[in-house]
Amino acid sequence: MPQVNIFDRALKILARNYPHRFLELALPGVSLEVVGTLENVELALPEQRVDFVHRVLDGDEEKVLHLEFQVQHEARLPQRLFEYSAMLTRQLGVPVITVVVYLRPRREQLPTAYEVTAGGAVVNRYEYVVVRLWEYADEIATGRWPELAPLLVTMVEPDERVLTQERELILREADEEKRADLLACAVTLAARYFDKDFLWRFFREEVEAMREVGFLEELFADQLEKKLEEGLQKGLQQGLQQGLQQGLQQGLRQARLVDIQHILRWRFGDVPVTLVSQLEELTAAQLEHLVGKALEAPDLEAFRAQVEALLEES
Image (tube, rainbow, N blue to C red; front, side, top):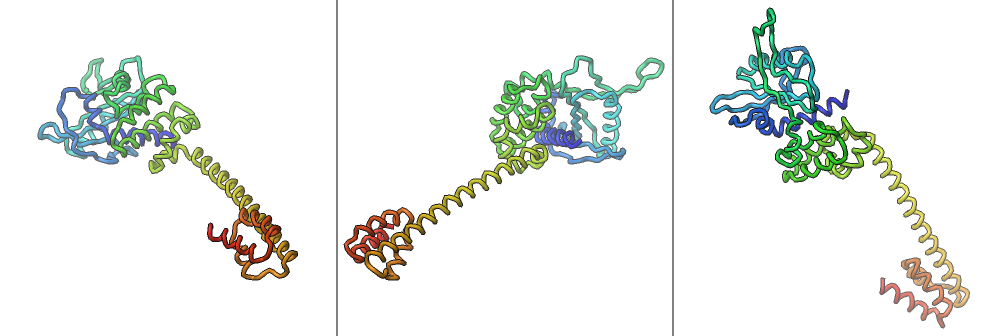
């Protein structure tokens, strides 16, 4: 489903940008340096792609860090990790460090190895590192690992308080691009637990500021389309109101221009073309003012002086 793909893309951002944080959780006290990322590594297995693979240095020896995220445990996961490790080792030619990061709490014991038994005894065993991320929820919430803040919603009971906490932690990130990535991840991961209309209202300011993050537009396609329609409707209404107002002003101006000419003709005879041209340069408010002057002026020249005074003021 598209939502699952979007969810995976959000996790990929965290795995790509912050592998050192997951190493710190998985192998505390072990000095490993992340030196690169291998994007979209495909294995020689049917339709299998490993997204979270990084190059690390253990002293002078290069190894590969394979990060695997699990919302909940899958029965076949140990065998799958064994297969991935074997294929990555063969394909890349370096030792593989496999780390599984579980997001949702689980009471039952999580396996940490793939085992083959015979006669009730273990004859082969492949071990991997397991990180129970929910055990670090309090430390993440207090700001020790702010880069992992978008994952809080997957570890605790999701509510508005958690989203507020995530946003506050993420906004501490000074790097604008990384901050945008973290906000995008927070919104996307929260979409598994919250109604999208609610998320749109809660993160609206951030989402509108991150329109360049493509999968956010995909996630909030309906909301963005609705906003566009509302904007078009609002623009149309404003345009109609402005057009109506302009039309009224133009109609009033034309009426006053005609009134003045009728008054002048009634009082002084023919109105010079030059005077009419001057009147046409005036606003509706100025013409309104001149209606009274046309009735009061002792002669045409006195009225022209009034018109020229207004033109000089304009």
